[in-house]
Image (cartoon, rainbow, N blue to C red):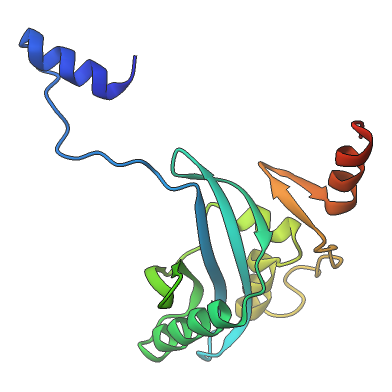
Length: 170
């Protein structure tokens, strides 16, 4: 039984469950730019992506190399750096057909898609550690092909998806 149905039944039956103050239908797509601000205040590394969400939680991601989205994300990361922030920075945006990209959230943190971005070739945790502790703090990851996507915790190559669509088997 959904929480809304339970709350409505509770209200009708006079229990203490009550009604929610608000409810929303979570979106299924989120766009963002993850940037890293080094100890000197420079934006040193970024990655633009499109995330798939299920019930408001990240479930997968693909690289999203959109120049306007990247510029907007870097603009906000640079402003955050100028205000004194150091470390990871996540800028989330929505796109309007007429007006273009609009920032909806800026976070000074790693996000739930950190693992996905690493699988897609952007090792933000390792890079941040090397920025703060030194280049020998952690070896660099081997570059990862970006011609795929992350579904849950698994990287899936685009070639595999094409093969599945053509042949019906992996």
